[in-house]
Length: 208
Image 1 (cartoon, helix red, strand yellow):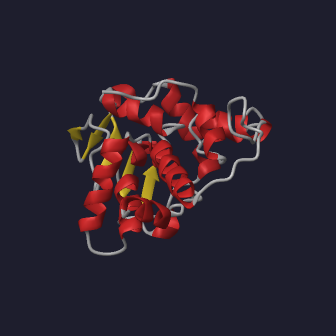
Image 2 (cartoon, one colour; image 1 turned 90 degrees about the horizontal axis):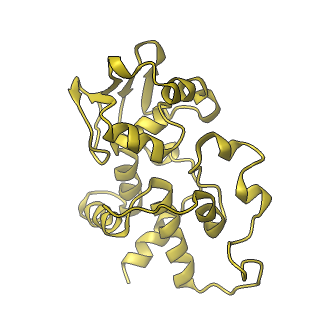
């Protein structure tokens, strides 16, 4: 499967905001966008006029990069959200939030979504007691995500759990650190998504 393999910090600089793609590094002074807040490239510091389409495109690219989704898959999520009841933009964000790799990250088992995706693919977690190694699985209220017994001494996981206080855990999830277990209490609501996202711009882009 195709995936982006370039420098993550370049993506944050391109979108002009912190996307938290590098885990703990993003919370330190080493964060690239704190040091160079302009877009990458030789013309990055120039004054560029952005059209309405450009603003919409950048918002879509930003959300794609936050969640680590490729274009075709992202469009598929949008089409699913458009068929659901409710507000299309919010439905899109809820679908992305309920991905298993995102839930693993939000519970604090990983310092970034990329790291969470790799841990899920390597079968470190169970979902409702059964092995789960597909990052895009949609969780639902009542689901239980637990770290497998043999994985509980993996350094990156234990270190991430120690640092989860910095990020905080959203209200719709519950973490039992002692049992290495997380529970989906309810479906996410818009207030649980604290990243600066204007989902209506994405709806406008795909509605053209």
